[in-house]
Image (cartoon, rainbow, N blue to C red; front, side):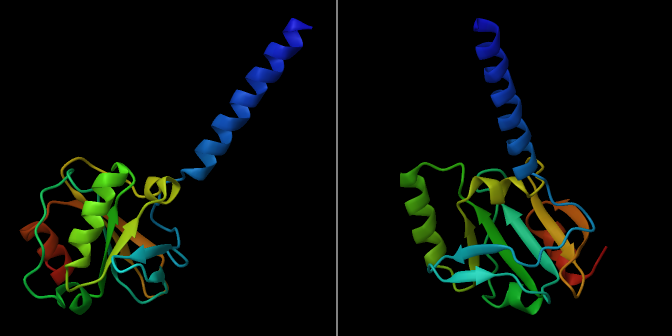
Length: 157
């Protein structure tokens, strides 16, 4: 009797682990980014459609960042900015949302842990997904904010 309870408990834990692993598949080259959903800093729903060339993913505090001086800088480079708020407390999320709302360019805010877990990350760097015209990921780069990011989005190698 006690063995079957232990067996069922272990089976339940294994199934949970498998489901968590399946939910957190990290983006890789060849994956489609079409259909990604998030809200922007003003609460407007956003669903990704093909056409954007770069997706910049940042977890505040992991990489020093600065806002572009030109509010159309990202748009001109066919790029979108995605900010991960999943690791913040409710209080810090409110502060981050209000700071993002002050920006003149669109920022997507990710508050779903499963969605955020799909982005590969490297300490002190932005994750940049490079996309083709159909929204398929062709490459993933980890770049420092500033000159390295600017060079990548400008087409400089």
